[in-house]
Length: 301
Length: 318
Image (cartoon, rainbow over all chains, first blue to last red; front, side, top):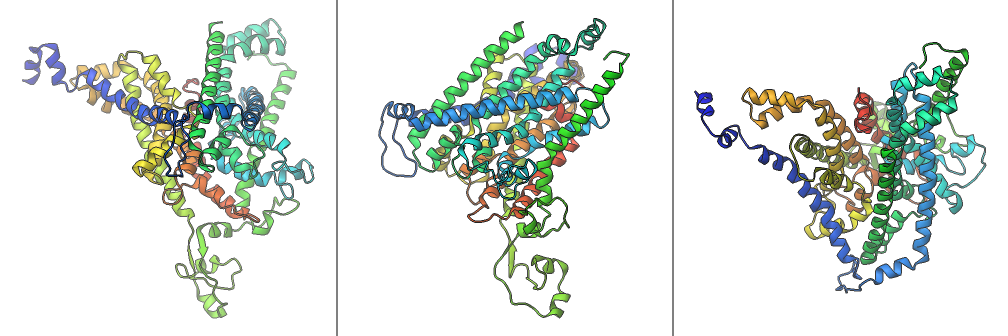
């Protein structure tokens, strides 16, 4: 009986008889997530923007004052901060370049069929599944000048990787390369497997050299996905905190995120650290935008 | 590849496979070192030259889980012999018997491990749940400014955790959410939600719309169609997304370090904090690290085929 009655109703009440309308369902499904993200990501940012113009200190109860752009002026003229940025830039370049080379190299090697390929690929993923903080901690032992296996295997004697400001940065970068090359490898493998096989067959018929095939077929076709890997890894490397923080007990590799943490939660210079957070944020956004523009160009070709 | 293979191609192929095996061994060496140190006697963890072969023991795990309240006087051999094995085991030397609860208490590690488990599981369920609904909404309905909204969702993931942590710390302090499970769960959901929406949207887009349309014709409501047709189809995608969210929440350090200190502290900030001054006991640290790695390693192996697709946002089509 019900279905007969339904047929006589207008479309709106037919939808109502079927439960909620599509519009209601759509809003119910999407709006909570958007609200949640705005409340817990955008709202805190606005909140800290306000604090960045004050001399507020979270550990003191004294009233704070509005200081205008003074925090920003002080930060941008502080040599110490600039050296943090330079260290971070060096770190990002070394570690991301290392990951791209090792990761893409591994993908090129893995991109063929051989026994236990699935198992080996999975084993190679393990480093990126670990906690960066704990990894950083444990690599302290591996790098230990007196009994670390790294110095023993490579015959480096008592070379102190982590307490030497010149090498600490590279030591952390090596660990980061170990941890995140698998990510680049995975994305590259996806890109490589998407290259149409008939292109290689055509190249083989033309007796093209390996190098020619690589630079004219493989590289152009995987470059968009390599660029995506590059964007992800650059952003992550710029934000690096955990590995470097647990690895270097002395501030030998003080990346900008570590500096920010210390300023906010050890010196309790809250207002100024909010300002520094904004400087970092603007830099992340600038880098991301540059990349996205370049990515779109590559895609258009 | 070409059907006919020259001998040089075969040789090249073999060399590549050997190179892969060597690279795999290099990549696994640090993990082997963690795992093996967890079973080493204390003095072999820092030996020169580094020890590769040794008689494994479980005392690092006992030290990890227990805290000695006070040392007892040596007991007479008869009492020692009569004691159950776990009480004998608790003291490294084996000549004294320490009573659990009286002389030996649980260390903080089990608590921290449980905190990690609670926070990671609940935040994963929430992030994947909300992400699945939202992804369905974006996948099936017209949304004004869809591309911009999706980019906004992704952009929340680009923020450095320390940047978000400063205002969140202040806000949490006002409402009393510092050092609480709920506070950490909210942060992890906010952090993982973008990823969950993006991954799930990839999986949802692959489920043919016709499935639900057929169900709607059969008299199902939209919600019934969603729960009875779409969700079962999306099950593998949900599993893969859940593992990723779980691993991220399980391993997160910066938020946990800043937002917790005692009650709700998770293992990632706890394990490094155990390194005090003086010579650290690497075997105990390794034991803690090894146990902490175990769930992730098991997940990775169980779900390896789905993970490969997940990491690449569905770029590898199976």
